[in-house]
Image (cartoon, rainbow, N blue to C red):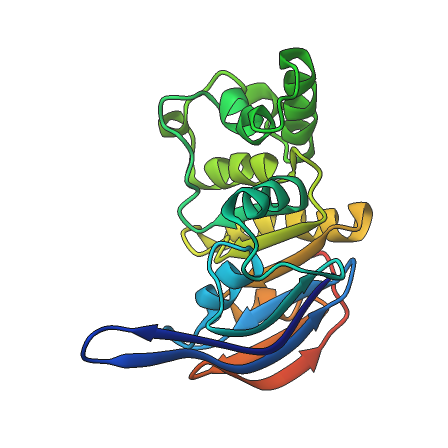
Length: 230
């Protein structure tokens, strides 16, 4: 589903050069649940942003579903992101002035989906995350765990092939974290959604099928597990 070859990312200013990623070679199989761990500043989020076509590598190749996508025009990258990728962030990134249903519908507006179909798909996504009774609530009326459920519903409403999750349980307590993790595992195991998750939580990483450890922008270890619900 995703193949990275000889990937490098360098950030440059007039006085300093920072090597964020070095010689990354990684394949994510269709239907896999992959987690990425490492200390702060090791390049995890940079890697996820590149996988999500939010940033370009300095060098190297990105294949998404067998197609080279690095350096495509912005309009084409936006189209691919909207149709193939779903994003979940640590800070939710919900729009405070929109209710739950409208937040979840948002990605479908850019596909020019009709209002009736948007509502139908959004309600189905909210049902999957257990929030169908909260459609008219606003983000500030929800708990952190509920807001993350809305963010997951928004990520899956367009039925993406890949979900990229950046610390999806980082702002949650352990109980809510487990609930969110189980939703992700269900999406992977029951719907076959490919998931790549950046996390600092060792116990959650070991519930995924494969764990890649990063240090100073490089892969240093790979561990394989049997992905499992709590």
